[in-house]
Length: 276
Length: 335
Image: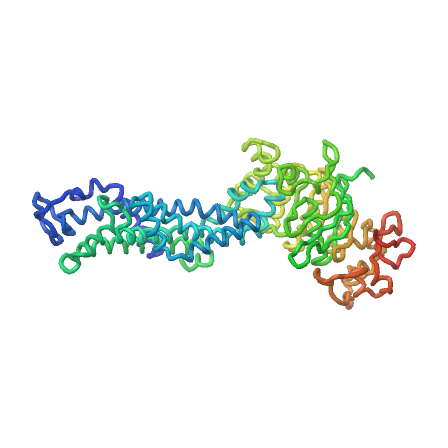
């Protein structure tokens, strides 16, 4: 495996482990307030023992613990949002590629429209209408990003529908839904996985962005974007409040991108010789 | 001769484009397939061979459509006109692969790369014959043995990329004959293979056709293949059947000037090095409107009449008919 791939999988692994084991590995309760120790610097000692590795925020909540719990929001939103977008986008892309011209134009026009609207603007409107919650974050992402999946699936369909094995399925009397599910989709998995990993990185950034604008995760849920937003006012006195979640967001996004690159290289037979 | 198992009667195919609806690309094709016999369909690229093959399975999709004629398939339930069935309906689906099967040109792309060849054979067995997975797998191994693949138990577990081109074409044939269809359509089955493998595959097709009583429609542009493997030959030129004959009659006495031209452009079989005689000119483009015979512009025997009307096929002997004004006794204007 390439170094890039190792780093990517390493980061992803850490994030997933942190999310699963959060209650055990967090040094403090993420919502426990310790007002005396408000805005303590990293490595400061807590009033009831223990060390605040990454300091505390204005309410004296432990930043390290909140970062660890933040992985849960980050992962739920990322995988949920990408999963839902894929579930909407891939079938639509297949329909556009394999059904009649009318459906094809409808789907293509819809993707063009959705992708031409600035994403953050549309997401902002949706979030302010629907209200701030994790489910709504996922919905807001899927409403916009299905188009990415639809477009990639459609362009792969254009290639696959000319393959003789697709025609020979037809000539063997196999129904279109079965042909698509059994013979077309499995041949698209590679490129779609790459899109999915890139979308995961995008979803993390979106979650953080919307939380930063106050429209993401609800305030009581520790999320990286929300922490950034709260830390913004303390930027000149308590740098750790923004640096810690900022680095976490950046590292995770890079991790997903590296994994995506690795899968892409891995699936490209022309690059196989170079990698081994 | 027995009644044909498959018959195309006066089938015409139209191409609908925005500018020009109903451009005819195949005109009144008549052909009959008999059990255990091979009919070869020859002609150069773009003459309508492949659309004819696709129409035989009612596989044409927009902008192509069958505009006229009937396609009759003999089944236990009697004779059925498949041109009248909905091309994507379930009735048509139960005929494809079960009654009429097709072998494609390129075995490299006609097999799905993500499944083992055994899986791909069982798919159609499960689909049409309702066999269980286990029985279907056994049958798949038998089929692989039947098409001459050594160690079929192991090969069935191989993926297409692990097999050579010839083996893959054998697998394609195994898939096609899996449900014992009565009609097999082979669209240039050996074009992508090298010459020694070609001969083996064609021989296999011929043997299977005779043993299993399948009627074969062999589409090719290789006259050598025709001479070796066909019983009857249809020569097409730009959407028209110009000559129809038994294979010996055709090679002994090619009647249509186009067929004569094709024969003259073949190198002699005795290996003598002579200059080949090409047919001058090119096939008129499909977008060109033609009055009369489409071969008139290249024909050495062209007459004024040729530019006016296209003759219908007329019999010049018991097993040969031709569509050409050179044979005034047989020629008649097309209806």
